[in-house]
Length: 217
Image (tube, rainbow, N blue to C red):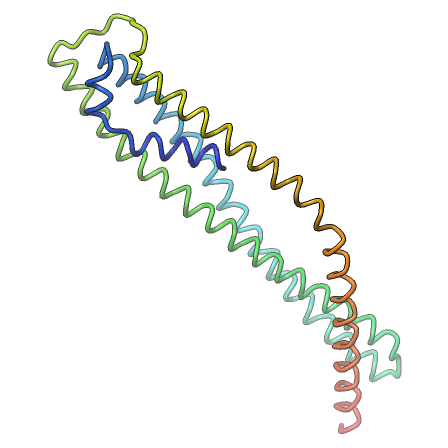
């Protein structure tokens, strides 16, 4: 995603006047830029469609988890009505697990939705730049601009090298972040144990509340 973001920003913010002025063959440069933008749009559209699909799947899964949680709640009540506290406790634990699953699915839905929205925004920017590039290419061709193959100008080559350097830097940052994440394993394990203690405490309270409700009936 970092590489795509850098590429999209570079393409969308490119100054056609500056690029044309520096290019030895403006028409050729514009055709290459048009091709690159078209390929980027195709790739980003596929990514957006996949992100939207993930969002829909996560929403469906969240709803299924909600239903399962309600079912486990009903099972806990039934178990207590039959004096099976052990089964009721297990049902409440399963209900808590399914509720956590529902929350995770909704978080995944939100993340995928935000990704899809960002991708659609990037596509819109590129489509605007594509229309601009096509119009400028037609103008150059009409004016009889040179179309023979030539080497890229120093200015264009410099922009490409600068972009490659930025991508390499971002990739290194990703590697550093992944390496650093390993140091958080111990803290994550501790958080899991504390969360389990908190969950057990809440289950005990809920179990007591169910018992109290049954006694009143």
